Amino acid sequence: VDLLPSDVKSSKIEAWLKKYLKDQGFKARNVFLTSAVKNKAIDDLFNFIDQHRKGRNVYIVGVSNVGKSTLINSML
Image 1 (spheres, helix red, strand yellow):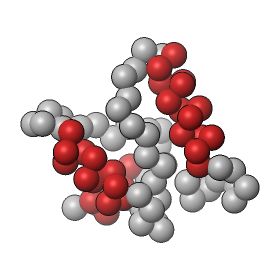
Image 2: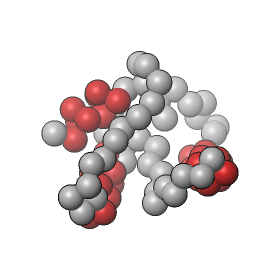
Image 3: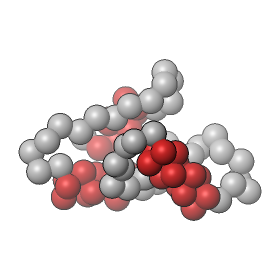
C-alpha cells in the first residue's frame, strides 16, 4: 500500500484481487492491504488470522522485497 499512488482506491484493489484469486481457484476469506511502515491494517490482519486459523498454518507469500518479514515482525 505504501507505494501505491494516493488517488488509487483501496476498495478497487481489494475487489480486483478477490476476483483474480477466485479466477485462479483460490478461496480467499479476506484480503488485507497492509502497511507495516504506517501500521495500517496490521491489527485487523492479526485479529482475522487469530480468529480463523483454528490451529492451521498461515502463510505470508509475495515476491522478494515486498515487506513480508517487516509485516511478520510487526505482528510479533
